[in-house]
Length: 535
Image 1: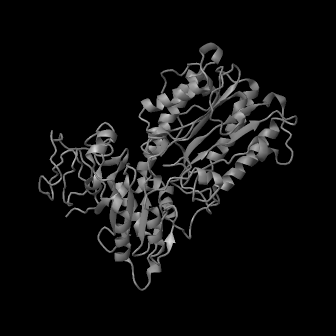
Image 2 (image 1 turned 90 degrees about the vertical axis):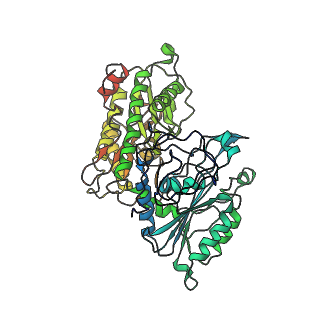
């Protein structure tokens, strides 16, 4: 008998022209009635959705996006199953994990932003719809846990306006849930789940792992900030209308409440081979876009292009290559504006003779890229610009060499190494630094952060912990030179940053963003069109 944990999404023949209502045909145990639906769990009963379609692409509906077996781009249904299994295998018998999805966010009135799923919920399910909850119970079965999903049911009227939903049937048949219910019954069903699985004698030994707002946790990563008047006037939306009822239910069980995020982040920290391929694809797309922006960049006086033109060209290029969205709001800072680390207005002209710092990356398959390049608007570095740039580049290369498990360094120690090397480079260039000039003014930001589903991935990973093989981190030293009298005048108002994505290896690092030009000769050749047509 095939294990229900061996989920395989398959391509299927064409959908029938008409789909009968839910109860119009009998359930079938081994043959799909809805021919376009991939068979995630072939031994589960098959039920016909009331309306055709699913809430996201599947191999059968979007074969140009997903290969057979994939639940999301580059990630198979089996890998999602293994993620849940690894999570539950590491928890106490009888433990319950509750993870909520994101909600649709609105700019104003009924004008909504493009939806992005909660990262932990997406990591465990691949389910891309809002207003959902995942509940995992550790039990003694072959699978090792029971999976229940609370989702929005199929709704003919809403789906006319907002597109198909996967519904409860899709949650079981495609996403591998053992059971599924409408999100409206979350509170009573959750109460039943918690009461049926709890030990009456020692409930504290069967903790609940959850991160709902309003539910206290003994292992929160950060203390809750005080509520301000502004928070009162502009409150954050609650995840669900019955949040108070759910919070009271969870805290009244007698079970210890622990952070689900912390446990999931332990899994997310080390990337699987499939995740590395997805991250590499995101890096490749962004690297190509950085090169194309260098070629596209010309002084405003010649082309009429501005900082915002470069951002638009970057996002256009990544979208054409299949990017889901920008991974973050890009920084495109020319001239003095580059002295602001998070300069995002991106609306100044491009002046001949100045530098541009472009910090931009796309998201592909749910994973982020994060690359920064500095290049000359005129297509050629001045001598001072080149000297400063090459100093930063040497710092970056020295740090990248240390991105191995064998080196035994933490992110904090990597940063301290970058400060030491940077001090030597700046002293060689004639900088006379006093007191805290280096780390307060010239190099005020931190060198590195983990990268993955989120731009700043797995925030629970301490800067003091040693980096490990399989992690992906960024390395980004930078220099910001304000017009202070003790700094060499030729460097005043210059800023240089160089950032790459690094796969930490056991003995050797791998630069995922290797295709983005960063040597002086390559950047100048790219800006001047000498690399056109070269891959």
